[in-house]
Length: 262
Image (cartoon, rainbow, N blue to C red; front, side):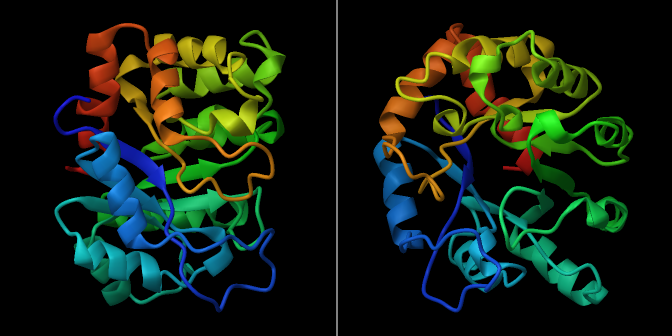
């Protein structure tokens, strides 16, 4: 593992209350367990994404960032009408972006796009998208025209079996060519083990934007009802996604440091 490696996508989960409109109820995944996973895999840094079961209550996320200010950054999901002091408090705590989530209850959707773009512009943040690339349609053009960086979760979150020549894959390639970032993550959401079907898609996206690809574990793999992946296996898969060792180190370090400010 290269020095300074970053896991750019994980969640922490504590006790209820959870939002009623959630799509799943996840078992606890406490901050100490995440720190242990980072240590075990040789990761220097991590990025925590607000988990949808908490809706817009970022308390656990912010508390975890406060306890690890040098090691962790965060992505929030927050009501758009917060006062400026709360946005600044999030910025000071290590929040580096806001997330739009159209796939799971508890997230906020594309109706927040204009407001979130303005907030991100004010605080030097990016906009992160958990959505199915097959369903973007005209919104892909809007994302390409954002005044802040766009980050697409899990390579577009569509079945990898559709292949790199599918309409969804071509849409993802166009987005990253237009300036979006992409998380090489969530293999088990795109294909069954051993995830070989994800390799052509990952390599296609890497070729389109080698400077805007980052890697994420997606620990603790919420809303996964099949074989639970091992993070070590997912890191081994990264060697297939990014065969060149120098480029792989860049995905794990340089690119992620630039996006999250480590």
